[in-house]
Image 1 (cartoon, helix red, strand yellow):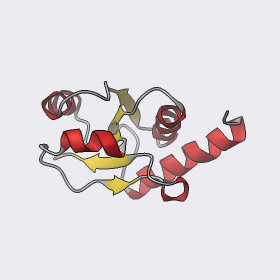
Image 2: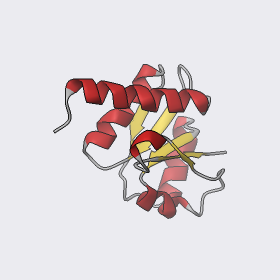
Image 3: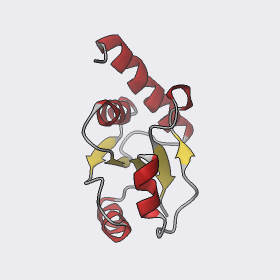
Length: 112
């Protein structure tokens, strides 16, 4: 169980990491994480940046992610290390760690 203060701190860490990645107001961020605390942290962190969180099925293939990103204008995907490998076919920059203090729970992938 995660306390409210822990969740708030983790969401703030995600927001800070997104700021370092250049995410700002009105940006769209695809969240490709399974339901659970990591998804909630990402969702809240994205909204704290003023950006729009766009949840997508974590099992979606790279072509589907690319189509959604193109349609929505999203330039960043948050995904687990396991799922990021599904996106290897995308023309994107190398993934970067989102929250190093808690370990490798999510990666950010910048899309063209």
